[in-house]
Image (cartoon, rainbow, N blue to C red):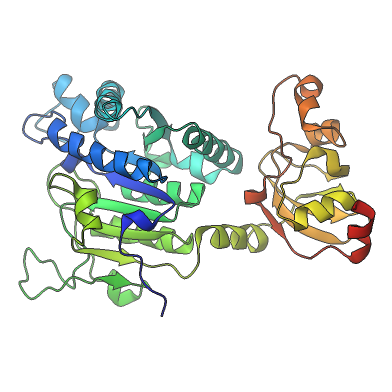
Length: 386
């Protein structure tokens, strides 16, 4: 059995999910600034050792409702949206203020369920978050409660965090909670309940251990955490449920604080590539020259210059086959351009895209992270491209 990753320090791209009950004082409706400052120091340490950090933060509704006098009762959807609109400003400011002390810039990203499911929105969100990370920021992600309706809501940030992990190929997600892991029974009611340190398969017995959501602001509970675990494990991402109420919760976890790890069977990129190769049916094709075939085999992205023909009708983000001049399938990937735009820039250098299309598009027709190569190039391909 492979060794279990037990420290957040081992992950290349780490997502931290922070719930309302941790970030916002229930009695006052105010952000817990001292706790937030301690977590910011933890995040700065992760960044200093080269890790990407993404935050999925609840709290906008919890903060905003107090300022609008919406307390003491269950809120209607439109009241939640109003509370989110004012609370999001205060939430973003709190994160920016805490991380600015470490010279870290915050970027706020608001998503809906549709943004993670529709291919073009998914691709846009993924690219934006990747770019923010390359620019050295810490993206703070929340559900776009102001515009989301019941039909397009996640309803909890556990699943949102898992979808984001899936989207950006994260290898680690930590759900900070008021409990230090998954127990065989509710430890608040059963003193014989035992915490499970590691889970490699979500069996019906494991799922039956989930309880109900605790009172207060939290909209999750163990049920949604196990839903998140299923998404993460399918995406090749490790996930932990850990207690987050004490100061420096990330440091505590690195020092061996108890938690439950959910361990996937595959790495993130392997899982994503498997999804691209096996779960998506191509709706078009890009015919490439021999030089491009050889470059793809070396792990390069597919550039417009290597494309000799575009077949089919497809939109940006749709799956397409990559075919050589002999009609043999080389691979499959998600195209960054529609068929119409792909035909216009095929055979041209990436530097010419803006002049041809009238806007600065992406350099790659298919980025290597969105591309699966199915065969090695033939010897003739390599000779012709040399």
